[in-house]
Image 1: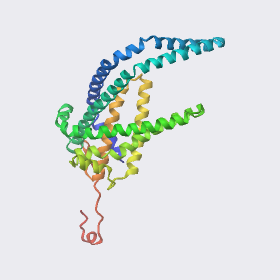
Image 2: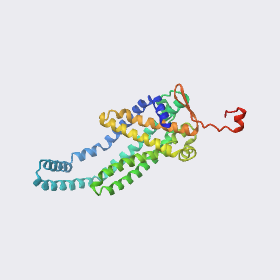
Image 3: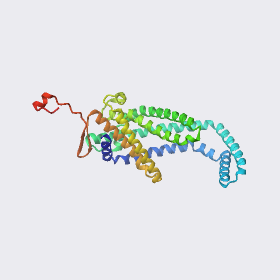
Image 4: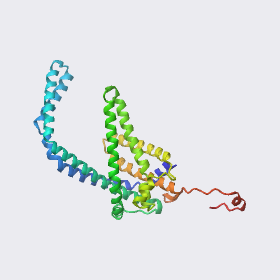
Length: 323
């Protein structure tokens, strides 16, 4: 039932997708410009280096001779590749400071861009809530400015926690896959586990944080109260929430993969912002259901999830069947 209502709310807020798309493109463009200006000189130096040129020439020569069946020349090119690889690694060691600084710049830009996209998600959530509760059509930019204080504090808490969680999952995946890849026979097993771990980690994170935004925006519980509420189990059907997120995540992965392959990436302009919007819609549908609140799915449909009180024997015979 939650999945069905989520779809209805998603369709009702479909126009928000284009606002999300425009906002994310602006953030992505600014982040790309900063990264390009920051690390482009170092990358250009590596690309133009003699060590990398000799390494690429050696690898291409080895592959060409292998494909042409010139087995007798493979040992010669193999030695060239090994020598060029050693020289290239030596170059990287001499440029270690630039590599570290470039890595720190990329990490900083990633954190800041994630924080800004979080502001957009918060504004989108506020728009969806107003639409569900009041049928109000709020402007994206106006909502972004109006909620800037609350969304800044929320993302200052959520973004670091999210990045730490992703890093922990990434490290665990690296050691697991490194252990399994000791044998090439386990390549497809590793690929399956890689995708499975990514999907499960996303589902797990969303399951336990799904009520954070709704409790903050709709419930007005404050930052600390919302944080406690999302991790509390009172009235929360964890397995039901997890199963719904599992279905949504798999559908989102499939649609984005199809958009990437079948439309050469053009379809991602719609599917990526749609993914965030539909997940936010489910979070609010789940919260309204958990709290027993009424909400609109369109101009004429009101969903009531309030739990009715059981009718006592005395009230039944008295004819008093109302709460």
